[in-house]
Length: 118
Length: 112
Image (cartoon, rainbow over all chains, first blue to last red; front, side, top):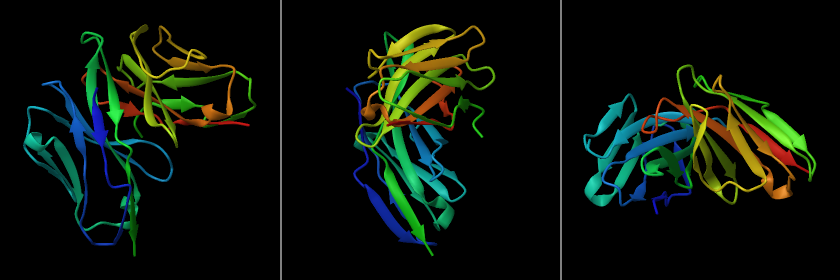
C-alpha cells in the first residue's frame, strides 16, 4: 500500500526565515505523481505543485521550491523568506492509480502545520 | 478559487439524521472525488466518479453513498449520522485520473 510520511507535525519560524517541509513516500508503482497542497486557516485545500515520477528536476516558483529525490523517495518543499501569510497546514500527497488503471486516488500525509510569526 | 463549488458550507444536524452534500466540478472536468478530513483519520479518500460512473471506492461507510448526475455535479449522501461523522468533506475534480485534483472549499458537517 502507498504511504506518505510527514514527520514534522508543527514548525514555527520567524518571518523571513527559510523553512523546509519534509515528505517521504512509499510506493511500488513506477509511474506516480506527487503533490503539495496548502490548507490555510480558512480551510480550503489549495494546489501548489504536481510532479511526475520521471521528472526529477527541481522546481522553483517565486519563494517556493521543491526538491524531488527519487532515490530517497522524498519530495521536500522549501519556503524562502517566509511570510505570515504562509502560515497554514501543508500536505504532501501521492497519486495512486487503482482498479486496473481506470481510477486514481490521492494518499495524503498527516500534514505539517507551519506558523510564521513577526 | 479552484472552480469547484460545494454547498452547503456548514451543516449542523443531529445523530440519526440524513444529509446531502453537493458538489459542482470545474468546467470540463469529468472526474469527481470525495474526501473526508477528520482529526483522527486525516484526509481520506471516499469515492470517485467519472462521467457518471463509479470508478473507485475508498474508506466509505455503507451508510454513505454518492452519485454523479448527467450534468456532472455530484452528491454525497450521509445517513444514520453518528457523532464520529463530524468532519470536513471535500469534493475535488480533475480532467482525468492522472490530472491534478482541484478541491472545493469543503462542507463542514457537525453532528450533535
